[in-house]
Amino acid sequence: MKKYSKKIEQRVIDINKSIIDSLLLMERISTKLLLVFKENSFKGVVSIGDIQRAVIKNIPMNSSIEVVMRNKFTYASISDEKIDIKNKMIEQRIECMPVLDENGELVDVILWEELFQTRAFKSVNINLPVVIMAGGKGTRLKPLTNIYPKPLIPIGEKTIVESIMDHFVSYGCHKFYFSVNYKADVIKNYFDFLANPDYELIYFQEDKPMGTAGSLRLLKDQISSTFFVSNCDIMIDEDYASILDYHRQNKNELTVVAALKTYSIPYGTIVTGENGLLQTIEEKPNLTFKINTGLYILEPSLLNDIPDDFFHITHLIKKLKNEDRRVGVYPVSQKDWMDMGDWKEYLKMINQ
Image 1 (cartoon, rainbow, N blue to C red):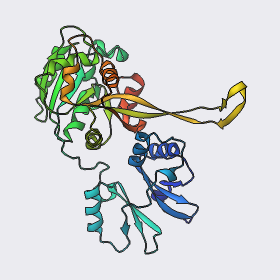
Image 2 (cartoon, helix red, strand yellow):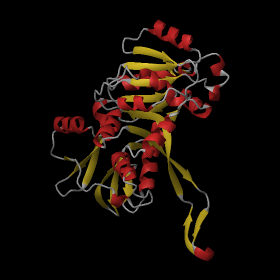
Image 3 (cartoon, helix red, strand yellow):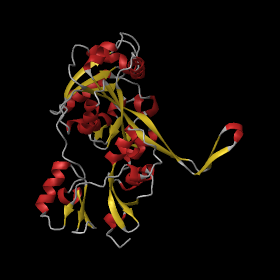
Image 4 (cartoon, one colour):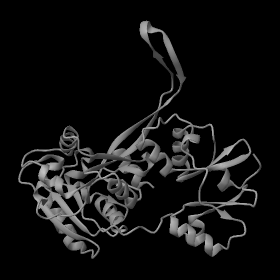
């Protein structure tokens, strides 16, 4: 391959690499789009969206990226004016714009942060209510939670839950329903003192432990639109509008956001058949699992499916599946999921 600039070279992936290889490279260099080459020839692009669609279709993660890459994609020509390129990137929310010459050869890429001095896209206004599950004791973060309720554990100059809420605010979501129990008065006093005009807060409190979904029953007459439910200690750095689009386009009643967690096995793995006969040996494979992140989208009608009793959200999901109702799973990269209620992840966050 001919010599390219560093910003191009680090985004290059060979067409024979697997889907999981491309996902791991995206995570390593913090990008959502790769440039696909076959030997010295530029062939197209593969994005995180392409990988997410492959996961949704249950395409095996060890499949070649040729299965999911796009041969037809948006690009700029070397003759295009900068303002036209900029407008196209805004309109289509393109993080990395390939620039091709008259022969279709890659000559450059233009990055969003180069034009806008920020890595973040302008968020789409979805303006949905958000339920924050903030009633737990935060036992994984003891002894901090002996003093602070988990939602108020500090990260930099803000608390965990403010970081979560601010990400929703960037998508036009301002109405937050707080399920509270442990140290509820401390949480209420904190937000009364904060008086942030971006937050419209409504508290609801369970009289007894009701599980991760049982308290939602208390909102039966208060929420009448599609809504998000989020644990108070997780952050998903993903386009919430895209998650909502998936939920609506598939007519799901409930959508689970799942992180693609990859584990590398440092040994050769063996698959055998009848009588122990060898079928395959795979050296040091990567195994990928979908992990429940604690972020969901629900339709308001589901509040009628929750009994006035102890009830986890997993119970609700099983109920819907048993009744052959639509439960979707939207995959995100493991790097885009932060479980801040875990000591290891919390320390990683505050040391960034």
